[in-house]
Length: 389
Image (cartoon, rainbow, N blue to C red):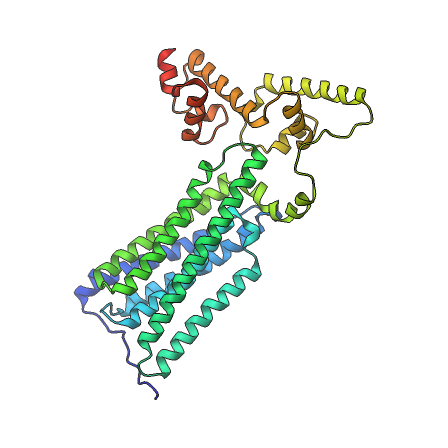
């Protein structure tokens, strides 16, 4: 039986327009402004940033569509009464929001995982669900509850899938950064994790709103929450553009090189040399280069990969790792942390630098991570050490 559909869009009284629709209009205006900012934001032209440039364009389109949608609902006055169709509409929009917000967060930590094929397939799946839902609502009487139930299950599956996918990409990114920078990088990626948790919170809120149908006031609160998140996400994108070059430098090429890396031996064996004399000569020069590197206090630099440091020392990552393991009887990471802690102690003791900034002066980006390392080595916090000296 063909269903006679009813229209759920009504012109609201003026006082309701001022109470509820002003928020839709404001949200739409803010979101459109954010779309313009994203379009104007320039990413580096290097091939490593290709995925980020592509995601930036898609996110701009997503913001533009959401902004226009909010302006339309704000102008015509969409009824936010307790009806299932409104919940279905929110879920269908949330399908695309979850896709593009998750994809953006994934690009932050694993650009090569968000390929055109992946985006195309997921976009087509979301579009298919939307088209099928709309068709069922228009053509079949009594299909509302069935469509709502199916869309809810599919949306939950999508959220779970994205959580698993992001966790896998995030863990891989942390591992890649720690291997290349030979440092604890998990704290430095906390803002990216928070960005994804924010997107997940918006997605769960959309689901809860659709389930409980909280009405106009809660809809306004929900609109404010996801608008604030859109602003936060744009701030994260700008911050990524400015400060996250050290991430792109590693993770944008990590996947393309993993096959070759897996084929190589994972243990640090002694490099092949033509003679023992040549090996001793190279070790001597490496030892001198390391001493010069320490004298020039280059260990306080951050955002340098171990490969880049090895190149400065006139050797390779493999040789450097072998040298520290077999000649220094430690790891490069442990050795450099000790140098940084000693430099921090000198700065606190002799130059009386502020405790709040000493971690940056010795090359540690994360303050809490530095305080943990300092306490492990000295048995006291930087502030306690400064007070004692």
